[in-house]
Image (cartoon, rainbow, N blue to C red):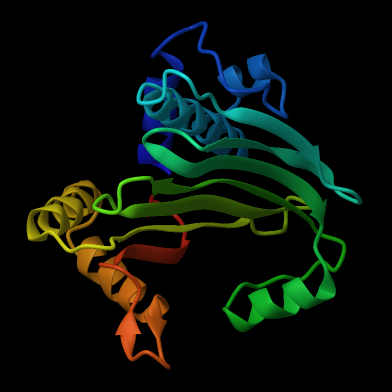
Length: 237
């Protein structure tokens, strides 16, 4: 968690008046001074959404992202969806943030136990925060980009309960036309980032993505792959 906290501090110092695409679900001042990982992830997700939208709008002087704020019924929280379409460069693209708090269902609890998580309280609350994006360019020689990164935790109901949490996500490209230099650049960039944290991450996450994006009836993988990971805990991030 130390590296994640360090990144959080750096982002907060980028611009003290940083403007997001829409207001955060948690009070902005609370996000700035909080030491909770869920708040760090909410800040990071809104930051990433804003950064992506600003960079993409730079290619579209006559087309802007439309912002849709939504709320999840039955739970606390919701999301902010930013959609751009019919541009000169971007045919359609979305950058979405979700911040959800709710009651952990028995089905979800059972599924998590099957993955080794020791959930003892049947009245647990969960927090889920994430940012995701899919970008479809107009030019068929430009690949479709997809990524999503998420954080999930179960709030301890007492000091005796363990704090259960993990990170997950992935990033991949789907081109219509294959350009070797693009493939090399994309995977080298992912490897450079992964290597900063653990030299085994890139190969592990790449294999995970290759398996995850395999299409059995076509006997091929989607696009040129990328990385995929789940259940990262402790100091892994």
